[in-house]
Image 1: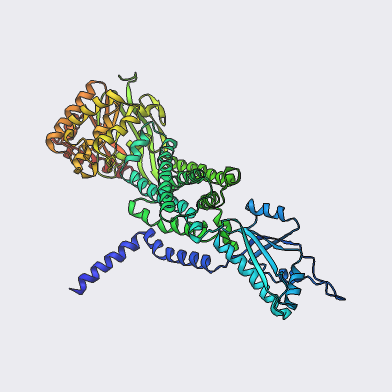
Image 2: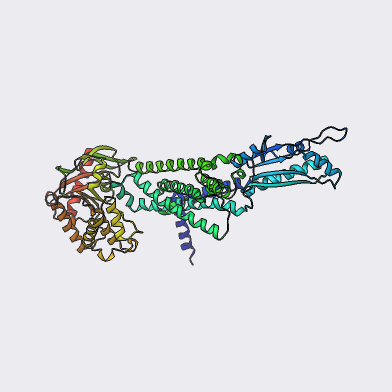
Length: 379
Length: 251
């Protein structure tokens, strides 16, 4: 071992990186990008969950006393940064909103809530306990837990301030996602995420190859148009996307026994459109790389935003408010949402069409941009 | 098999700039139908850039050009031209046959006609035994031969060949030139670039290119005669020096 030789190697590697602006940017920007995104995404608690309160509580009037509403005290103690509360009087209408996905749960305080609470605290042998009923979308475990935790907290805060301890029951009646575990929430997201990742990266590498080995030039010198190239890629990767989802689903169902309520065909459609979007994204990104190795440098920028913002691993309600608009700017979010709605809630196109629409919009946009970059290359 | 036009290629002050760098500078060129025209010059002289403009892969900054009687860019001529890029332009993860079939299909070839053409071309480039081999396992010269075969599959009227004989062994190079002559007799026009000055003698006419311009153009014998040299290499150096002196005088 000779020091001067070691230093020659080391200096050469330094030079190598320093000469390539992209490597340099990668080396310093990627860690900043990763830390910021991870930090921000993980630091947030679940926030802004839409819930509906139906308060039917008639209050309790002690002999010669004033009527008190115990429910109102609890409601005023609910954490309003976690829950985004709307009040309604009709339980059926409120349930309808949960079924449509506009709200995550209905919190019901029945008519005799205050009465039962008061009588039970005076006399332990009183037969009826007061009950708070939460009817919700339990398919998203984080949200379900956040709602229950918030209600529990409000309840215990109220009891502490009142200084009495009636037994109050919190009953949970799932509208969606009965018996749903975290894996059931997780798998539909993974379908979309895996297809997003593999398709984007595969096309990216493939297309940088086309650019660097002269095949793209040869093809573009032939009667083949830019649009035909992009559409040809779209058909192949759309098909690959469907095959990938079939494999993923088969394993999820057969090995992990996950919950599938709806018709998986609708999830397939969403993922196929996502794959078409992603191949166009891969072609777009390929225009920024000169050599196949440089394409690898894009991976963190492809993986991280989708990983953190698309709702695969935690619901969008667990992402800080100001980051949420970014979630809706990336295509996988819509595919994750659609797959989850189909598999956990049994929704069909009548309800997930906005997701389809968003995915088709992104597919057309990215394909248009991909064609544009190919045409611009000819200028 | 060819359409009616006198010149396969004409350019009128064709120019291509990349930022401040002028790759092709007010270039005027005429290539007659069924002529083999060779572009010779050092690296960076603008040969490849010129070919890319003529094939429609790149646009021009200024000036005009006509290819097969049509002002470019014109998509209608794309099916009549064959382009062999320097970077071989074949798919490494496909077999030899799969590559040829792909390039055949984009020109709407199929069935027996395609099979016959593939047989004929593989025989010509001596890759019959490698028909089902993955291209990534081929040597550099073999990839080049495959690339030429792919260029010829749709029987183009006009061939743009960028360094077609790089990495091709001398024996096969001779058969390449014989084949080019056969194509010429069928009415095909060929514009090629080469570094091999000796093989440029086979061209009907050659153009010496330097700094984006053609500094001399004529029959190889004539160029050697004018320069008083008996090799094209020396002839090139003669014209290059002359061009520099003239350039300095103008400056």
